[in-house]
Length: 155
Length: 155
DNA sequence: TCTAAACAAGACAAAAAAGTCAAGATTAAA
DNA sequence: TTTAATCTTGACTTTTTTGTCTTGTTTAGA
Image (cartoon, rainbow over all chains, first blue to last red; front, side, top):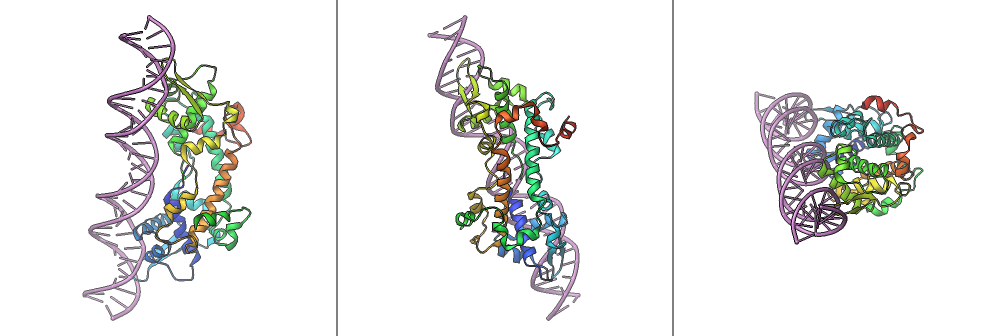
């Protein structure tokens, strides 16, 4: 259960766009330099985000990217689903059933899947309620959870 | 944000041990056949679980594996941490900081990390309260969440 | 029309994760 | 003491994920 780098980088690119919205579009080189992510990789992230309908692009000399809609209408759960898939979905069962056994015969499999489903619910409960706008708020860092120690660790 | 196969298979092996505890130890071939996981892979999972202190092994002709302690004293959060690491830990920052920028300069990075931390808390809240014993209970599947539809999907 | 700055897309390469293998060590029993 | 059943370990192969590259398209302006 790891965060993928696509989730980290993709969400950062999207947040950068959200933070710097001012009518004009932003370019890949600009985001690349500001966020310290390679030019090529930013392009890849934005491609995924565009295909997911979160950003829109314009080509040509003055081209670039803008959010497809206002930050308060972009739900973080949707963004992360597009970038990294879900913790648990129905295809997971087929991939890991192992041999010809089915859920009825391998009790472990089903107990475990009930757990995965419950974890997914817990994650969704957080992410479904959050929009990009919430992440932008200055106070978000310290909202109802004491996470200020993170600042110490990461500097 | 995906479950690793190590988490799926490892937890299933451990649950199998928990369900079949009756004084005697269980062997790799037995778990392999019952759970439909390859012999070699079961060996690998049990190695990790042993190094994490969740199971104990005995070599030799009547060797095998047993739980290191009673199921009610094995916390699922600990098991999953051993099998798959955490969603977010302090090392994540260094890996994804990108270029020489630090959190103070890339606001996206810190907003995103506060989110990861919050997700980790949500996951921990579920997993810290659960022991192997809870997963063994027949009723677990339907406990306080309606997940019976899963049985339909997965059969 | 030509050029420069930008996005687009698929192919390719590198890295990480997953799974397998082979040689060895241990134990109980014949 | 020999044998068979078992665990132990590190190395190896395969698969998946990540990141990069190359070629092409689009647009504005000189």
